[in-house]
Amino acid sequence: MLRFSLLTVGMLLASGTVNGAEPVRLRVLSYNIHHGEGVDRKLDLERIARVIREVEPDLVALQEVDQRVKRSGSVDQPAELARLTKMQVVFGANIELQGGHYGNAVLSRLPIIRHKNHLLPNVEAGEQRGVLEVELEMADERLLLFATHLDHRRDDCERIASARAINELALTQAKQPALLAGDLNDTPDSKTLAEFALQWTSASEKSLATIPVSRPTRQIDFLLYRPQNRWKVVEIKVLDEAVASDHRPIFAVLELSPPQPAK
Image (tube, one colour):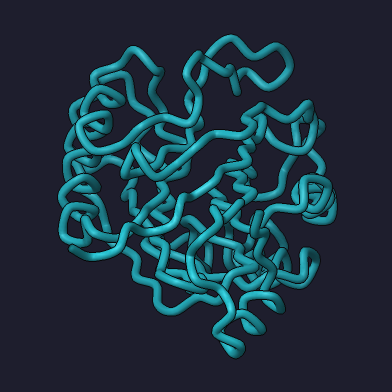
């Protein structure tokens, strides 16, 4: 079984020894970090980084990330988390806030080829949301990761519009394997998740509650994949962390089968 780190990817690309005969195993985490502020009201990025490091992920989708925002000490949180985890980082700014920006971030051990932040539909002047698209290098092909955080209001019209926009974006690159991770602010039985199900498969077959953080009863944080026939879920769980943020992180070990030869 192949497990990629930045070093091994470089070695495999240089040697040309990988022929796609084995699945690729990836460790993936999605975490709404609440700008590093825990339920104890302490601002502690090292604590967030420790949660991340403990599961040794290859890819991390982060939501509610501050970049040089006054409320979080004007720290460049994406850069600091990259330093603390020894991973690469890209950031998607969706909102200007207190002298800085607020949005989503991706940490990666795979080489990042390109990234682009797409602003999502905004309904009735709500908080601007976005999806961060990241293309990652593997030995035989490239992987897409879409990291997002959808609208939180009771009315689901913006979430559904955002799901459609993300689906359309993924369809433009339908030949590439892809992951979608983030805080979708809706439950598995919602219309939002039904819209995503037109293109994506949830890594969790049953509901895995992520909020409220002290005693979770609802799942609103998800890991999804496409195409369905190339991915296998080895493990998925919600981490037992109830202080560092107001969400619990969701973590999965996924296997991607080799691409089929062109006919």
